Length: 187
Image 1 (cartoon, rainbow, N blue to C red):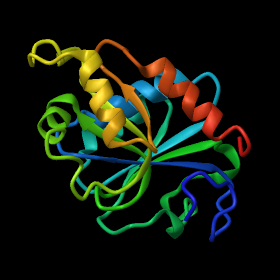
Image 2: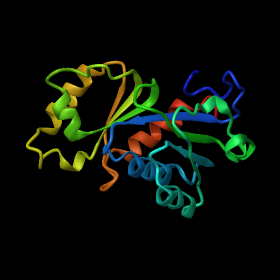
Image 3: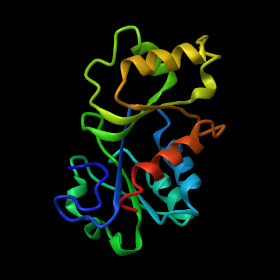
């Protein structure tokens, strides 16, 4: 399925941003921060994976964003209405998918990226964009921000790269702009 298409195999009527992340990459916090960036421009919902807690779902719901947690193996093609989401009222659904799946946005912690860079991305599936999250820890980890960005750009030349921090807000404005541009033809 085209990760951005408004009209997919099952005729989804909303833009779909699929997100995959490694454990402890700060994915939920990053998604929450991205939602905050886009809140005034888009009607959104979030579909979290099976490891999501009820507290995480409630956190999104408290901000006025519909959120659901789905079982492992669930696909976006299963339909939003089956999750109780009204497609007619949504512009964008941010859907967490498993690490093994291709996605629009792949999230790694900067620490994980630093460990991965010497050996290459291994079996990391393709993504339109890669967010190296927790960028506020780069210097504390003894790394150089510019060198990290250059190494990551070499590893993932086909992906748009973002150094982000849900804690400080770094990189979030640029990522939100990418989302708006990426889906401009379907929003």
